Image (cartoon, rainbow, N blue to C red; front, top):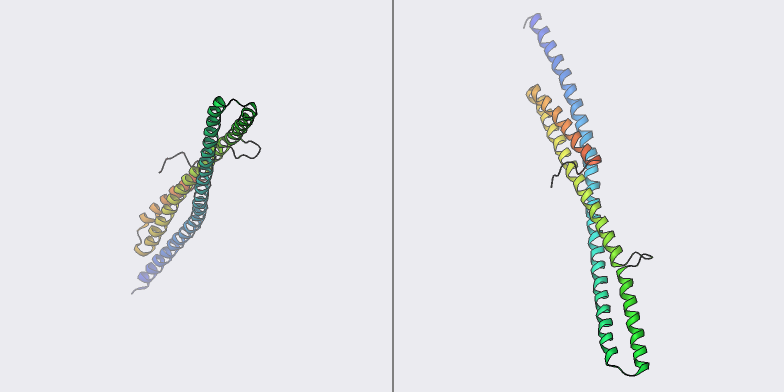
Length: 196
């Protein structure tokens, strides 16, 4: 090998080494973004599961209160029928008192703002929990797509080092941008794109 060929080989090796450093930096940046996106995704997934359980519990409580209210209303209606067939004033007064109590209880089961446990308040809480669940689910899907873009970008950047095909590094860069866009959408505008 001549001195000129040795010099060309050294310059080529130095150029390749510089390119590999840039690709390694791209891989490191992609790995950082991947870690952030995965962490955000896991948090959103946990939030979605938690809010799903919360809404299910609230709807179950709502149903129990609705059943109780129906039973009490039915008892009050039955009491009204009994009231019509009774002639004794003392019995009528006692039955009327019980009917009033049942109606008062049924009204409390419908709306109980002081405890937040009336069916109206429970339905509102359950709908709010469902909204939060849907929001977290939308975020999760965006973070997952962002993570996928970062992972594919890492693979392509790694393949650039092995193959020397610089076009793969450009595609990796485009995937980095796509991953950042999806992660950003998950953070700030999770309902802009409907992914599920």
